[in-house]
Image 1 (cartoon, rainbow, N blue to C red):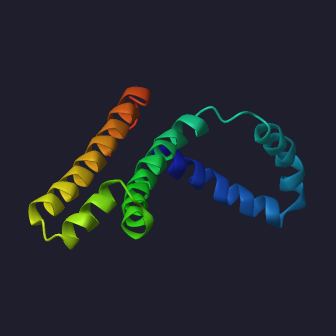
Image 2: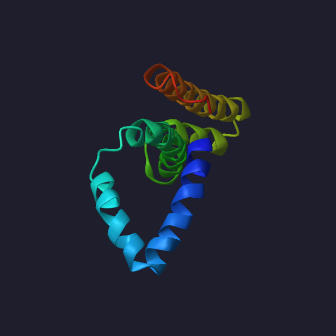
Length: 126
């Protein structure tokens, strides 16, 4: 954050000066063009935590859609197990199916967190 603030303090006035005065633009444009082509080595490490969190969140959605699909049109799976248990009024089996889905989601979420912490030790924990 401090790097962004310091860069903004210098960059915004320089950008305004470059836009308003051709001599400033002519002086600073070669420098900015040079810097623009340099690789940004912080960019990928800074983005990786977000990249790692996206599949974790998406996996939660996938579990939900999988169970809904099994409820609608499957002849096996947890959703089908819950639906059959509901038809037979086997409340204990319904809760068992719900608990298994919840535990599978919790385990996969925890595995993603562990993988993120192992692969990206510099990133703050979510």
